[in-house]
Image (cartoon, rainbow, N blue to C red; front, side):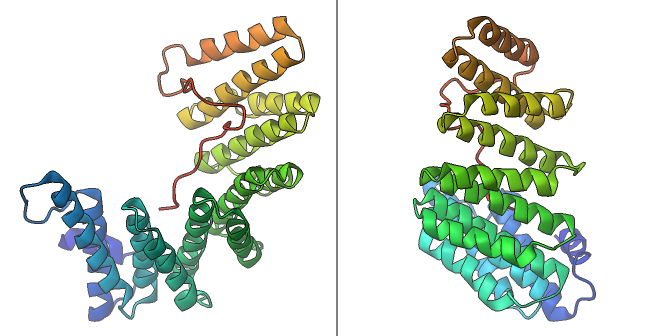
Length: 300
């Protein structure tokens, strides 16, 4: 455990004794959450898991009360994640709000990153709870706060906020605005080399095409699907390959709707060829036209 604490402490130098304890509590809480460190076993598995979660919550709460802004902000975000994962939605939203309220004016990069993560997670959570207008307002906070950021982590947070905003707008049938949000992701992150950011761009393009198709603009949608294949067709990353396969599958659907059956069959055949021998790229059979992109997990 000392080694883990020392490793975590590297992100927040210099540390006094109290802040070092705060970092330690973050590591302990995260370790409990990840199953790396286990409390004393109990008889019932359900209670056992509950005890693990409660121990993680206590560790994160203690850390959040510490003086060190970096570790405390991180603990607040992790507290929100574990509360959400264990079904405590109000407590999760409260944890994210507490991070923003306490550290929203900070200028230290490590703290700003956690504020951005808290807002991104809150926005996604509100969308998942069906509170789409509140989700959009929260996403706009991220976009406005960090629009001019040059640091990759903050740029990624803006991209994720735009993604969540697009999902919420789609859910409200505000599809033109949703397509514009997906366009912003492509404009802001289209030149990034990081595979995770490239995947976000690919997902944005796939969802934009699906939105255009839902608006009846199928010819425009075909062009966007083609763009996904052209830009990412040679990628080695499994997540990117999956988005290419998704684009080709959806392309086939739209071609069929346009009565271009030969082209549709060719598109489906390319999906099969690309997925052959690559189970991680295979598509789930139950996806509908409105579920083109992978819904992102909480930023953790």
